[in-house]
Length: 571
Image 1 (cartoon, helix red, strand yellow):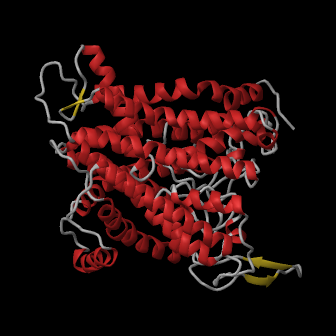
Image 2 (cartoon, one colour):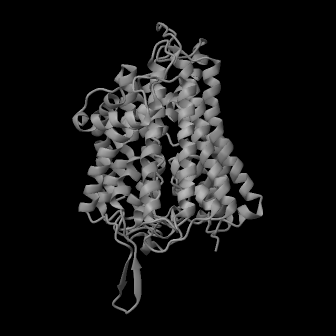
Image 3 (cartoon, rainbow, N blue to C red):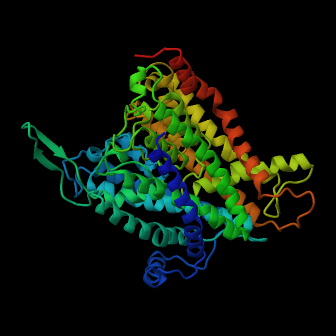
């Protein structure tokens, strides 16, 4: 990779390291109801929300009530979104006579945005009206992200409270997450994007005449206000079909860097928030180190593989130093496009600035593996932390406990059979959904009609689709025709399983841990800070992921790369 590509990676990582303690502390203070800089402005509005909605600010919930609240919010939002998408052709703010979405597509879309996935089986500028985009989908970008943050905070409380029966109040956590964390930063971010040329208008699509005399329709709209929250909230999706490769969403190298920073910011900062709850910042930095060790290895590999290019190209093409530019924007280049692919799947963002279908086979392995790990490096907003703490930390202390022959402990609390069952359930539900739906698609006629490519790449397109939807990522290989009844329905259920199949056992684990009394550390207590703990965390996460998904990955990107090296391509 070039020096400029390397500088992009280094400056991005350093900026996140600096921002993590600052924003992480701010999130902690907001979620615990402490006074912050924005309190004089937002506190009256927060109280008004509680008064109008009948929320008792000081009333807390046990894990069952917290879970029910999350599920009720999801059910109401999914139904409301479905109704709007089915009726968008007769509702106002229809900028271009856009038709209503079909029943299966509306179901998929509504589930997608409520689960923080933002998978789109439609073209953004022609499949959704301004009302649907701004009044339904963009609102979900805030509420679904805030829900993930709220669940993570509830888990933090469960792990660190002593003999408690409650985890907080979901409605209070949701309100604070939107008002104090997501909304203010998104306003500033949107203004920066407008400054850089991203449209923010309610004007209809513009019809222009080209120099050749042709008529062209140029879609515009309230783009900037949705672009920043889609990145910061780890939502993904796109106002335009081309997503963050579109110059109206991502005009230049500066906006590209800022959008990568935004998609990493909140998920990374929650590691420091966790340290604040634990009363030991080394706990948070340890989780941060494990997350970024995995993420950076994948990112550097993706950048190198894309910059090296296709080995079947003539040597003079490779020596030109452009790398694999198929499906990429010249203003970003091959290596930085590989970096974006790794970052957007290391989080559960799903925004893309190049077509992942055109990545080199082993580069395509990086986003696939990121999603199949559960997107915990650093993962989605909140989801990355609760995934890492259950799939990683709880299982890691269990293994460490077996090594020393005593009951495992985490943060001074014993991890017993019930907690291990809940942690294993969160790990198994991902593999069952991804591999189960992939298997179904590869043995049924409707499933096999989806891929546009033959051979192992076609299999990768199917595997990627269900990895992305179960992982609540939302990016696609772009070589799969997903707008069919089969893929709309199976994809919607994959998204529901990936979201709530994890949240329910995680909140159950949090409730169980909250009720436990801390035990005194002894010589047999395995330390959960330091280099050894980081290595163990990384090992558990990678090995669990590899054992679960390596056979499927071998049938897709790995065998495709081996065949490419041997000169075998598929027309």
